[in-house]
Length: 591
View 1 (cartoon, one colour):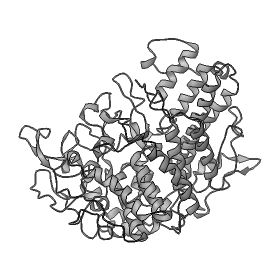
View 2 (cartoon, rainbow, N blue to C red):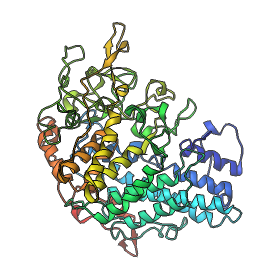
View 3 (spheres, rainbow, N blue to C red):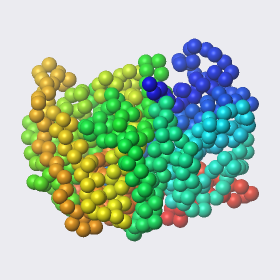
View 4 (cartoon, rainbow, N blue to C red):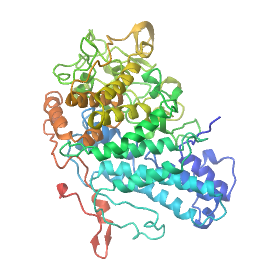
């Protein structure tokens, strides 16, 4: 039986405590002090430091930071900065997010600052592991290699997340980092650091085992997938969209090897990727692990705590509302295929402007069934809680009628700790469906359109499984929580496979559209548009239409050559001074 790293921070506290003390109340007590470097120079100590590095993966644990600032699920930077979602809630809440939604990226925005702080704290912890390990001689060589591999995997992950955010940034390794020398990490941000990210993932891939006893630790396959992801993020020019065939070609054998391994498969039902009951499933290559109990919630999903409906039982806080543009993308034609060019010409009907008690005739057109696992909308059962209505929304006139759905736990996982929104619903940051669609992208550019079509159709076939359709629910008389489920689909779900990709341009569009349908509201969209080199084209068109629906977006402007990346935090530049000059330089677009 596999055991599990229970969010890393709590487990690290427990292991570090075992180095110098023993107390059976450690699960409910706050740490009482710090441990000396000497005490950590042991097998148990370095394991504790490694778990401390894992603790930064979810983005929590940073002093002076709200957990959503640096959340690994990236619903702020990858979601509301894209065409997938609005900030949501109301106009006055979290104004820093409003600036991000309108592409007014400022170097003093606290969310941007804390994203930088959190990622580089994670990097520091991985380097501390590697440096401390050098002073622990009494350790089996096999275990030493595993610690190095896991630390390098995490260091690659933290730097990867940073490279998505900032155009140029410093790479900090264990040779550079010195725990007791604050000057040691003041190094220039000379350019992209992809080669060093690749090296970390490659080293991890070569040393990690194919399976792990603890599901939170990365395997060889996880490192291989992230190395392929690093290549995919260099697969097109960010500004022109021109393909980088060398990087795409480098990704191809890795993606093929993961598929050929037979270690992973698509789950039968799409929704199984978003339920606590199916964590670490056959589709999962690597997940961010969460845990919660009545005694401790530090390991839970606080980073997405705000992104829950405003109605009971959540009651907070209505953020991260899906856009009308995203909902429209799930329309299908008579053949069950997406409307690649015309999806946004008309809107899927919503209950915008209606009270919950007002009569509502639902949209009768064809829809991809993944819509109702991705978005909460009028008349559709929301997980297993209640039927969605306008009372789910804090302010419909501000951010529309839809709710986020994927990251929200089912009823069995709600209300375990003091704040019910905290759950153990893992974030499936790397799953098999990504591998299939990335390989389809590669096949479009440097391989076979027929193979690309077949890969996309594997994903669509799973979505078309009727057993995975949301069922129709009927409101009962007792309360809002009273409903009955019928044995029929909740909407007119029509989805079919592609019969042909007619040319490269059509194939490219179809594969990218499929990625949006499959991974919508998972925090990837802004960065997918970035790596494809189409942000300006897509987001300008998005704003032109959304400005007719969302008044607060009327002055929003996406500037090509600037808004593809975020500015380096001014506080990071101010703290980088060495011999009278800053070692960090701001992206020229933000000067």
